[in-house]
Image 1 (cartoon, rainbow, N blue to C red):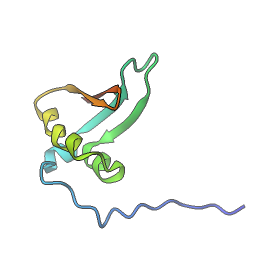
Image 2: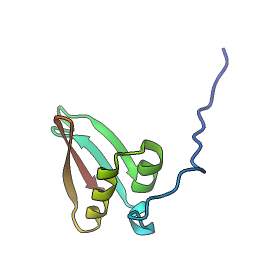
Image 3: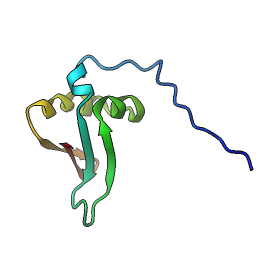
Length: 87
């Protein structure tokens, strides 16, 4: 059986201007309401990695600088409320 390694081409992706170096290194956790009991953990890592790998909606990218002043905020995605917090 062959083993495959998934390599992401992150060299072509540019960081949006609203994501400065301080914000890009900030560690975050993104989860559904009710986590850890009933909700789901969607992402845990740095803001920079999240933006480059997950390619979030532009509206969410514009909200991320709020994490420099606030410890957490809620984002409504379709019908689910998603919590984004600093760790």
